[in-house]
Image 1: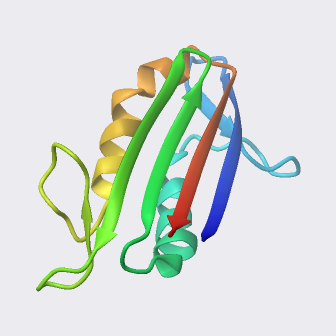
Image 2: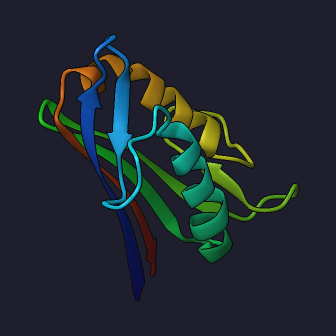
Image 3: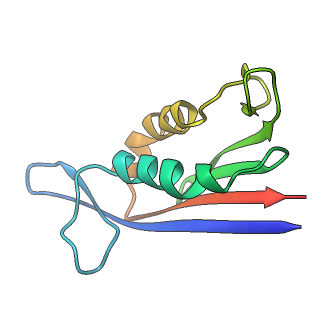
Length: 123
């Protein structure tokens, strides 16, 4: 069995004009956009690791609770697809990750920290 977890810890703050910013790296300035970092991590680090039959869970951990997506990466006639319960199979899981992110964006505004976990499990 193989497992890997990539964790992104985010400090969240607001500017004087009320705009939310995300601090991921200690020595870099806070950024107004977390979604681009999530896309970069997904496409460059996670997607390239996946093999058929792997399970990918993406979890947004906030003080208000966890918001997670779990999908199986399975073979199909079109190539590997993600199958998530309650959703049609898809070649790309990032649109679902973005959907969950946008759904919790207001919760992020009221949080001081968040943790995003990309968990790949191979059996």
